[in-house]
Image 1 (tube, helix red, strand yellow):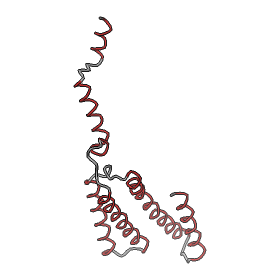
Image 2 (cartoon, rainbow, N blue to C red; image 1 turned 90 degrees about the horizontal axis):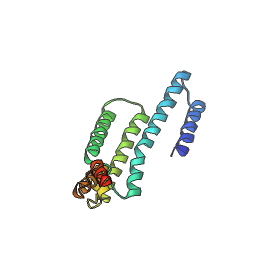
Image 3 (cartoon, helix red, strand yellow; image 1 turned 45 degrees about the vertical axis):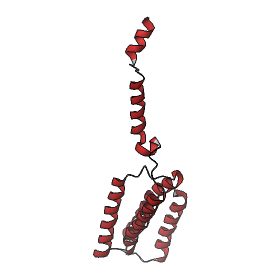
Image 4 (cartoon, rainbow, N blue to C red; image 1 turned 120 degrees about the vertical axis):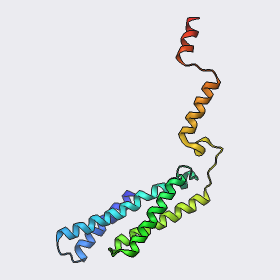
Length: 151
């Protein structure tokens, strides 16, 4: 991702420097930096989509997180329509909508398989299952080991 995106961002900054009029170097720097932030913001959102696709699962994306993403996306859209802002900022708000829709599509496409412990509860379910098994096997830990050695 970064090997493709960084040359595009640098190319845009050079294009902006050569082809567009800027009142000062400071203005050019601010425009270039904001464009880089918008591009990197998109890159920060896509690994989750890729991970969902590769695992064919969305168990690691809980409903609470999806709810927070929905609220964040809704508020961004609201401000994009109400507040006057640069076009790049407005486009970045709607880019979040596209990623959110893909999240929802993946949520529908890849159901959570509760029979697999990793998907049903993550690492906590595995550690709880291991602790329960140790208790059921009457594994007393160090004290039982010392008693067995002394006998």
